[in-house]
Image: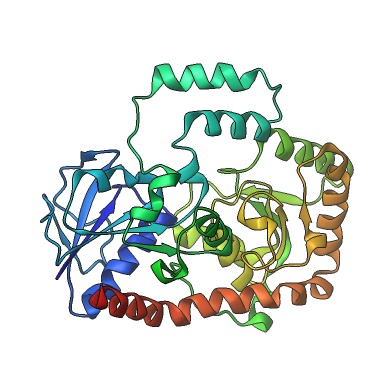
Length: 344
């Protein structure tokens, strides 16, 4: 049996997960190939994206019923190119699947950026003119896929809504690349530093928070987590007392999980996977709708979390435990998937 994993050739949380899966499949004795490409176009590369990857690079896919083709939910159009191979979608998010529908993407972004509704149409026309049509598996066709892997409850609920049978899906979440930290050791290096991820944050809302803090609490330092390698990112998480994520959560998200094991106090939005208590298991009082009236509440909470760090940090123990369990259980979860594939 050969396993082909379709993957874009750029480093991200999703591509890291796909390579982690490939490594564990290799350990199961499977002949694994990374097939680098995006939206129907293969990337002609001769070097694996991650140095620790044990898979091989494929230039073509053997469309044989004995083999498995695994694609991320963001790029399911590849599945239409093959007819015999067993097909698997690994749902690393929900948003990046839904945004293949341009109208859905237009409405979501208009709302997220706090723009008037007529921007729906302007954005839709702009995308239609700028981007070529993308092939993807429509929701009504998902039941025809051989198997689904989902990495969070947010996606699980969606698959159930689409009528996917429980026997055709199982949980698999890519683990973060950090180990458990010592709380006592970290507490000695914590500063009144607030780190935030601007990549998926609402620019409208984060500007209001920063403006309020600068006006009322200018001594507190904010650091955007951008333009950093992984080691630099972890360095800031170790120092920070608060991790702020006012963005959309397409799935479990790696940086919030890394913040949890580095004993940051955490504040999130209620968008996407952050809305439910299973995927981001922190108290509801630390999750906020992105509304203007919540700006001052968030800022007051940030200050209190910094000034009384030790009184808050225990609220995130459940999130830490969940994150560590994903690390500890990943191999056995992949092994379970392999056994299911053997029986198909």
